[in-house]
Image (cartoon, rainbow, N blue to C red; front, side, top):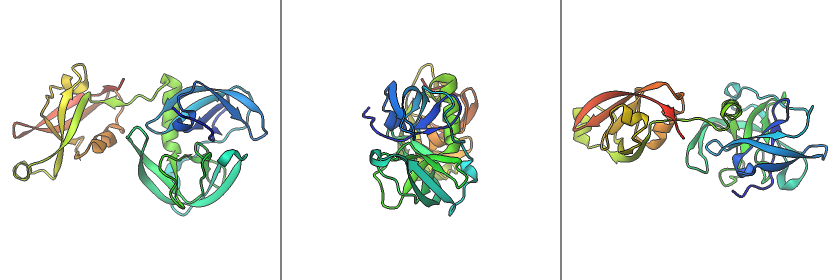
Length: 275
């Protein structure tokens, strides 16, 4: 990856810091400069391109750190402060308000990042990876410059996502995501078939191939099966599948509603960790 200059925020004792995955750029060794100008070695603990977050450990003790706040309690109109090092300038602060909650953004690897916090605090190149803070200095999110910098719009990966990603990276070195073990394609659902089966779908997700050792194969699914719902939620796109699966932990069982040979059938699949 390219990596380069960016910002980060210390989030706990022991020198743990968060930044963007695209800032850390897959590098194992990084250099962190503190607000006092000290240059410290930093090690990449883990990186999750799907949420554009990376966890670093800075080689120093007793550094001050910020607390991760509750992004779910943040409200539209609330004052927020973006901190970072735009263009390499030390610790620049800009203010704005939360302009929307619950937006989705596509990460560089194409997966949707949910519950993005949209705000009006001006961001510049180099702000990426820095914290979005509330008026009490709690971290509501990590600013990300995934999309071309739109005028007057900033985006932050919420602290609720960051807390989950950090716990996974500390425990496993990667974020475990449950997988069905299928490759799929979206297909239009013939109108008369949808009417006959009393479905609301216009589209369905067709299983094109299966991992022979995956959850779907174990559940008896076959190529050509059309997935129309998972856990009672309509599925009309790959993003719909990801959205449902992101709420489930590996080892949990999901219920699928599928069409095979023109008839509806139900199947339960126990999810495994995506490798």
